[in-house]
Image 1 (cartoon, rainbow, N blue to C red):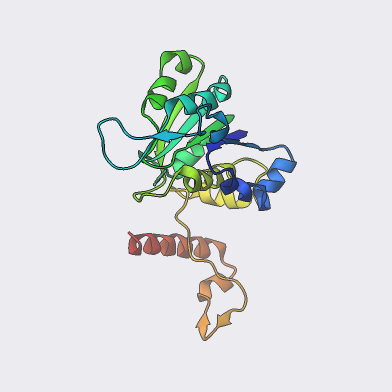
Image 2: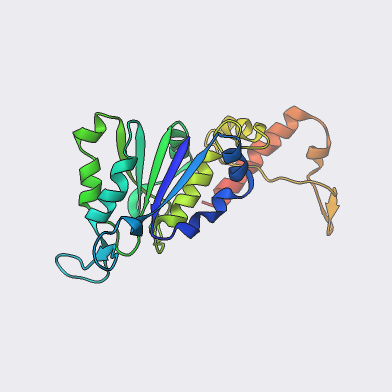
Length: 227
Ligand code: ADE
């Protein structure tokens, strides 16, 4: 899978070379490329934004700069993800869908967002006929300073689903046995008693059927409590 990000803050993506994602790049499972949006600004001051038509606070990112940055990335079979708090809510099933993509491009907007014609332009037949799909995605109902952190969240959730990225692929099998893919039971390790709190007896029993039952019930109770 190839993942590209377009941003005015390339340094945000330094963590991609850490840990399991760093290893996945070395082994060729993943390729990350970070593009600096400002390098596509050909105007006098390398501006990437301007005031909004119709007035109002804040700045809007220039369509021409985004067009220059995105055009060369729009190869056949691409998912273009525009990060915005107004987008469709990211969840585990969306992560599963994107994990089947061969090429994802994250457009990280700042300020009040990207001129909406950018979304409209890449959402036309010219692109859809080449399997270029545009998605507006939000990672939650809160407003971040920009799409960089949101795309890092998505990258981590998506790439850990790729074969060979996780150290222990069994973690994924267990997750998918779970209807929702993320409802987890509480976990315990040594010692059996810590600060006078004992691990539930059943987990020490070796009775796998009973343990599975206990875990399902505990996961449910936990999910209900956190609703
Ligand atoms: N940009 C600003 N807030 C965001 C959010 N919640 N999700 C995705 N992109 C964003």
